Amino acid sequence: MTLMTTLDWNALSDSERQAALTRSDIVTDEALGSKVAEILAQVKQGGDQALAELTQAFDRRELGSDWALGPAEMASAAERLSPELKAAIDQAIDNIRRFHQAQQPQSLRQEVAPGVVCELRSEAIEKVGLYVPGGSAPLISTVLMLALPAQIAGCQTRVMVTPPPVNDAILYAADQCGIDTIFTIGGAQAVAALAYGTETVPKVDKIYGPGNRFVTEAKTQVSQQGTAIDMPAGPSEVLVIADGQANPAFVAADLLSQAEHGEDSQVILVTDSAELAQRVAEQVEAQLAELPRAEIARVALSQSRTLLAQDLAEACAISNAYAPEHLIVQTADPRALLPQLRAAGSIFLGPWTPESVGDYASGTNHVLPTYGAARTVSSLSLADFQRRYTVQELSREGLDGLGRTVITLADAEGLQAHANAVAIRLQENQG
Image (tube, rainbow, N blue to C red; front, side, top):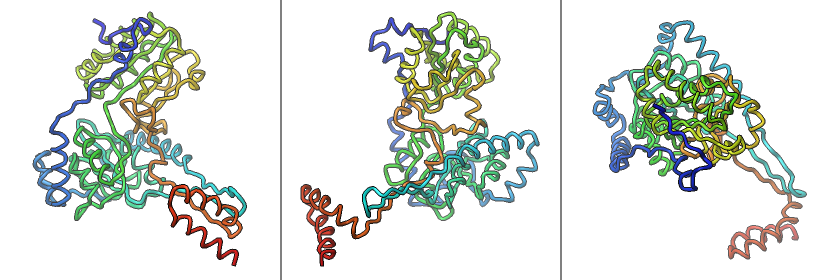
């Protein structure tokens, strides 16, 4: 039985094409918003005591006196890790650091008219909160993708939160990325602590990191109250463009690498070869049988699709319409398609570039826009840990040359005080 529905793109009506590119409905609970709002309010009012009560209620754990892990715990964790795992973390850090250090912005200074100088500068966001999810597997890579850019950008306060128990690899990675303290709290209550601050957890200016629907909803709500967030995070997704020369085993492996994330994940294959589509389907079945998370992947595949395109130009158009989180191009000349690909969180070119390398260690950031947001939202980068601001400086000559223009525009808008602020200076010049 074929797990992914196969559709001929050119046989579909406009409405059927739209349906073919529709994501699965995000799992929602009508009461979720109010539940999260209650948690946020409880932490805002009750601080550390509220965190203790919510941790007991949701995680069935005592917050205790050791919920802030520091250098001693990190050093101890490093001793328990295997040399192989530490070496892997260290290599990933080297690559991620190298790529993000190269993203440092350059200041711009331009004299736009005689005596009128404009500048564009950047500075680090002072206080950032980094949320690393817990669950069945330690998300070591998320620590690297959040903590390294924050360190390189120069953010002065970098607060990491993650649900207990905290894996040794998380502690080691955080230490290597310059994190001094990890607070062992999770869920919406951790987001609230970062947004409002408590007696122990400092208030931050911006919150980063993925999480479950409670975390996502909490981030959304605090973003409407003045705390910035990185981006909305939805279910994981990948789209693969492949031609008849692609290796079907590679394509299948890439599809499954995202399908195993969760039942609400979605994977799309777009190809101009019906034969390749069939061979990929066979490989998906064969590889699926060997996966520990096969049942999760099977549910995700049931709401995923293979789309048969007329040619690769049409495949690119389909991809742009879908705007995937991850886009993999396995064609004879993948780089030739790059100018046609406009909307994707991150693009992986060629047969030797699986999505997994971007998730862990190639150097790019794996925090990416999902659910079609890649049309307007960028992947996480050093710029997300900084803010840009402008400077302008005019000489007397500069104001003489620009003043009449400003007065005319201010008068046209009916803003007399704006005009006066210039006019009084021009009169001074004339005196």
